[in-house]
Length: 253
Image (cartoon, rainbow, N blue to C red; front, side):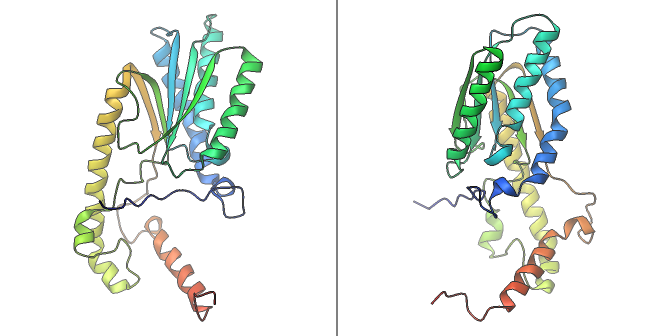
């Protein structure tokens, strides 16, 4: 049986940890708050159920892990206060791959749940759901709100056609990189289309009737491969090559 390679963000609170290097992700989450408000208003405008399930897919860890969940909870509370009706009991789910730093997520969840209990005296149950969002994670018709921020660009796997032809995503040889650019770009586009279609199909089964899915994705300003917005890997390559040139060996002894 083949071993599945699973990647994850750098755990802990160190200088190179995700927790201390996730400002861009925080900005994206903040921009989603108006969308969450609109989704809550649209859903609750029909009727507010007695209990609601809210899930963040690809929550990662650190200070951003609970941002989308807490924004949704706050939006529901505000709506119910404005309508002078009691808020529903809420069940919160935080999902990421099993290798995620769920220890820090658990601490954040406990603090958040305690703050909700003290401030509002409303029932809030919190859970962690390890697993890939390219698989079923919840029972049918059970989730009212799905949130996901800058996570869906992570594919289920690298395109098999490239692996078979031994073509890397990014080749350090600029001539080969330019030669294979269209092949690589099209292969990854097809893989994304396949994965995203699967993702939507799975969430459609898990959402209640009228439920909402709010997500954000990283994009670029131009489809031109020579544009500035597509040169991230070139910058990384230059930095890594410079670092490699400064050492005589990668062996510690």
